[in-house]
Image 1: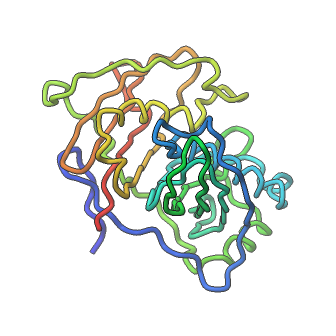
Image 2 (image 1 turned 180 degrees about the vertical axis):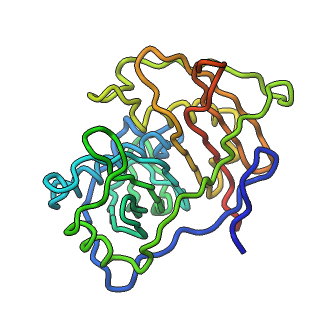
Length: 278
């Protein structure tokens, strides 16, 4: 049975991320948690996890031939399953591999595991962290259009997985509900020039800073294993005002990031943060 098409009136269906193919190659590296990425509970925030994923992807790129053969990629979706929070202080280990692909896009899995430590600021022992993630990456040409993955890269990536017919299917509802139907009013989110990369794209971590602002009022979602799904629908450029529309349904918070369009607000990104069933 295919997954239920998501709507803003139903919680999202939870399907665990697939494990790595036995014996498949993968990229691995070690890192250190820094205080700039943690919240007041010493847990790595969602935007911090997004920065970790960017660092791992960049390091994986540098260790491969992608910079010569397939230099341009965009992220269409990121899934982050916080099974056990990564906390500070800690070292964490990253493993990255291809979980599925087609000729123009891939599902890149990243597993983050941490060894928790204590210090004078965080003296109580905590469980070791475990975060499973998935990113839908699209290979593009220098004009930003989807492009075939080079033969060499496809051969290397396809050896990591038996799923070679990856298709796109939204995990979040793309249509924002009418504000008259909601208990929570829309709110403005202010962007800063430091939120943008050298290509005038809003940094992936900056999207999740807006999500963290919302989760201040939904801490019950952070206190248990939870899944974040963010899907990027339209680019956000410097100077663009953002309006956040939000809706809470049982154990899920939906967010729609709205930007001005020719005929009114349009959705630039969709977000869901939901409880992972026990």
